[in-house]
Length: 329
Image (cartoon, rainbow, N blue to C red; front, side, top):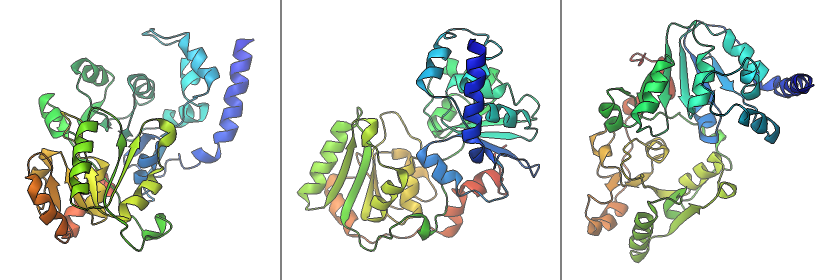
């Protein structure tokens, strides 16, 4: 009885997802991008050249499927039908066809990495670039045992674990993608972020900026329902003169705030000291809060932004990073 209910649910789910999977067909031998959808990653993936094949991983996330999966928690060997409890049948059929080198981008937990790896054993190379902060050696070893070549976006973490470092990537964005067009910069400074241990730093910086009569828009995200869409976030970026980037303690990977700064010609105030080593670093454009003197922030804000060269921007474009001259795999 349960098997019949499961099969009926799979079929219904597949019908709903048919349209979403039409792009998951292979037309070239170049590496295929595999990703788990989220708002900002969808935006960046949308900047890929049309010739680049991509597979979006669709999972069953309803309460019904979560309850069924709970029956198998803690098992190291998944039963035959477990894959269909987690991945849509369409995703499974698409992954089975992959023969090209595969590049996994974004946020994959260990279970999803394990399930995906089972379908990529016929590829000659599987590359996983993690956007998550991974600081546990056992977690990294588990990924390597699955057959993944791993890279991290945090230089110091990659060095610590002797892994490949690949910096953050972004995309060139036509003005038509961000609507409505913003014609004026309403705010001097803009920050958007979750409330974490960095809250005291955010509060101190906001107080400093307000004391200098700077107009600020700081959006504190306390729960998921308060999140803005990524396009809404970009409208705020374009409506501001300067972006605020507050890293979590011990994190040195380049955030999306940094990419937004250089791709949209906005000044940046950041706590990430690693940025001083980057090829786009310009003290005219970037103020490192906690290292640069607070009393210099007024002079910094008064300076005009100096655009980053096209040659440097190209190095951070997703197409150049994974399909350009210096591909990392």
